[in-house]
Amino acid sequence: MDYILSIVILGGINMVAVLGLSIFTGFTGLFSLGHAAFVAVGAYTSAILTYYYFVNYYLALAAGAAAAGAVSLIIGAPTLRAKLRSDYFAIAVLGFGEALRVLLENLDITNGARGLPGIDSFTTLPIVAACLAGGVFVAKNFLRSRWGVACIAIREDPVAAETAGVRLFRTRLLSLVVSAVYCGLSGGLLAHFLSFIQPQMFTLVQSTQLLAAVIAGGMGSISGPLVASFVFIALPEALRVAQMWRLVAYGLLLVLIMVFRPQGLLGYSELSSLFRRGTGGKEERRS
Amino acid sequence: MNALDVENLNVHYGAVHAVQGVSFAVAEGELVAIVGSNGAGKSTIMWALSGVKERSGGAVQLFGSPLPSRPHDVVARGLALVPERRRLFSDLSVEENLVMGAYLRGDDEGTRQDRERCFQLFPVLKQRLSQRSGTLSGGEQQMLAISRALMSRPRLLLLDEPSLGLAPILVDALMDTILRIRSEGVTVLLVEQNAARALEIADRGYILDAGRFVKSGPGPELAEDPEIRRAYLGG
Image (cartoon, rainbow over all chains, first blue to last red; front, top):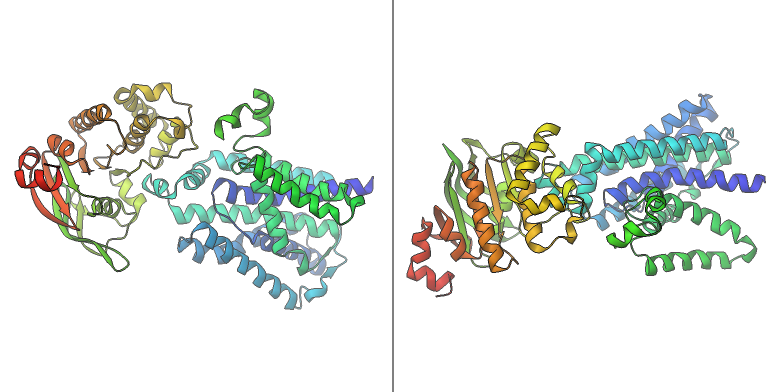
């Protein structure tokens, strides 16, 4: 039971990060191969605060999220101002993420590549559930706001959005910061669940998994990526009996989704609309 | 006061000098057409005026004060562009596209009024309100593109190749609509490859070739000019 509980918690923590990336990639249309770096910033910031300075857990979580948002400005400001095309931006963030990991491996306060052991494990299922529910609530309202609408317009056509009066740089940067804050929160939850973090946990592989969940779940959907991310966490665990073949199954699942549902599991629609309309109604039109 | 005063406008794409010292003026309430063949620099002028493409030289006055350089400032000053190929937000509904057009205004009441005004111009849009804009027909898409631009309540409307890809009967309706928009007090700068149709309705016209104006004059007069008919209007 503990084993299943821990998978559910890990899945929930991952979903918080996917929710953030979904705002940036799914709704603003920019790809990132480096969002694991923001998870790392959140994890290390909050862990260092509780580990060395005995800061309150919730304050530390908030500080981790804020730190991730602040760090995203460092990479976001120059690259987004230069209007890098989406694929170039993804590479720039990839480089940034790897550089940050090397930095974490060489700092004293992060205990280098050996990682930080013995972080207090505060994170429980109710806390994760609350963060996730709060995250969904905020994301939905953000996307309905002026800023969110501007993000979606940029995804659809950046030039047309500009001529309608949207400020490209500011809006994209805001979207990046919001997504990084989600990832930072996810990192703080993760550090205080596993009670051990090391730089090796935040590599390109993690960034890719976040991005895969968003794309497989549906760009422009909130619930789709959440479902996909949970499947991607739970499936490898469920298939542990199959040993190394489970990774093959993971890859196969991704390929199948891309072949049969190139718009992602849910496309542009949400789970709730599927229940309302009966299966498939809305996104058949969208496809 | 002129709506637009362009003096010695230059635009470069890297080493390519696409617009080479173009000067023209559009008086308030006027309908001016710029015509020319493919690649003459017509769209580049439009992008430069709307702030999307950087100007590399020249002075532009919009309603008597210098034209801002960033697109959102330009829109706020009352210039709206209907871009070539429409560039709708194709996964968004007709309604959402209209709302985006009023993005900078942010007043719900005014947005509603302007929507009604668009429905008067294009009644079909009202029936399509919740339809995804990418699924509209070509003519309906053009109507939506024009409506989206009108939603910002422009004083000067720039239209880039609005007749592109439309059936001749729809082009007739389109030209009527442009005249109607002008009669409601909006100054119009029209860029067209379909030179004959554009010059017919324009107060004045300019012929653009390889980044320079080669001729200008009253629209109908240009349309009749034998030399121009031979070079740009197909005989």
